[in-house]
Amino acid sequence: MSRRDIYHNTVKLALQKAGWTITHDPFPLQIGNKRLSTDLGAERLISAEKGTEKIVVEVKSFVGESDVKDLEQALGQYVLYRQILNEIGEKRDLYLAVSRPVFNNVFTIELGQILIKNQIIKLIVFDDVVEEIVKWIRN
Image (cartoon, rainbow, N blue to C red):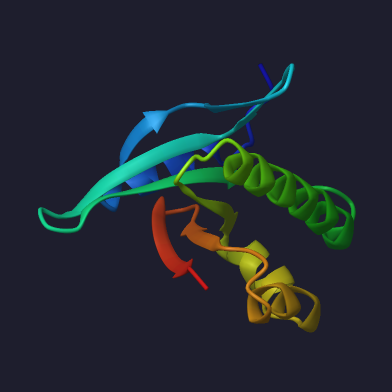
């Protein structure tokens, strides 16, 4: 089992506060003989008519020496996981969960804005103090 991110339980609690049910912790992925996992799987009832919304979440803390290196690693995992989800026919949206300070330092500057503007990545921004979701960027 891979090591959990320092904000794993914070994001899990924040999703539950927002009405999500955690269905997988971690969410397993298998492609060929390779087994991987994202941090969380969750779902919530949208309405009786629309059904259930399902997501997969990868939590990243960006505590390395370089925000750019952390972004490169997170983006690489995100693209890999999204491709695997598509390949296996899993109908869940993939989100990268980052804290508000990481969002402000990485995703409000040109480098991060490119990813959001070009709809490369979906984000969940959380407040690590009050353990709540503060922003969804769904593209």
